[in-house]
Amino acid sequence: MPKSLIFLCVFVFGFSQSKLVKTKVAEGITVSMPSELTPMTPDDIVQRYPSVRAPLAAYTNRNRTADFSINTSATQWPDGNTELAQKFFKAGITNLFDRVDFIDQGVKVIDKRNFIFFEFESRVNGNRMKEAEQSAVFRYTYIQYLLKKDRAIVFSFSCPRDQKNEWQPIVHAMMTSVKLKP
Image 1 (cartoon, rainbow, N blue to C red):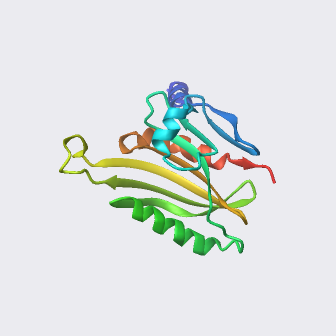
Image 2: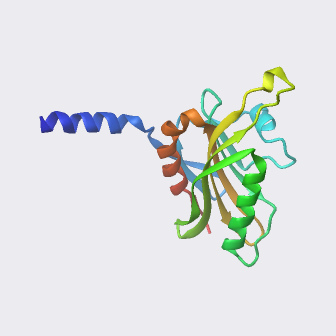
Image 3: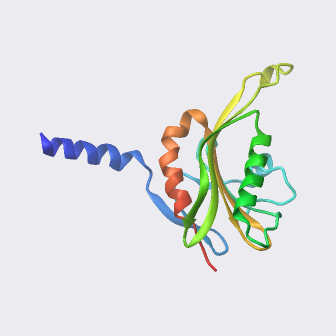
C-alpha cells in the first residue's frame, strides 16, 4: 500500500505543474516559465497593451487566456521608499477594477532584491447597454514591482479566475525565479 501511495503522489504532483524553463525575457532579466507560454505576436501586444510604450516582454498561452508581461513604469522612486510605493501601487490596482479581493500582498526578497507584490482576484462589471459586454469579467492576477532609481520594473501575470487553481502554483514559482543582472 505505501508504495502505491508514493507512486500516486509522484504521478499526480509530478505532472500537475508545467516544467519551468529559464528564459531570457529582456536584456539582463531571466524568468523560469512554462514552455506553454510563448511570446505574444505584435497584434496581441497592440490589443492587450494599448500604450505608447510596448512591454519589455509579453507572453501568452495557446488559448490566449493567460498572459505574463514585463514592463517598466516611468514612476521614479529615487529614495527607494518601498512602503509609500506599495500604497501607491495598491491604490492604482483598486482604481482599475470595480472590485478587488486581495489574496496576498507585501514585500518579499527575490534574488537579493525587495519586490512589492500583490496577488488578487478582480471583477470588472459588464456594460448593460451593450449586449456583447453585459457579463462581468473575473480575473486572477499576480503582479510584482522592483523599484529602481529611475523606474519600476513590473512583472504581471493574469488569467481568468476559473483558471486560478491551475496557474497559481506555477505563477508563484515563476515570480520567485526572477533574476536581474546588476
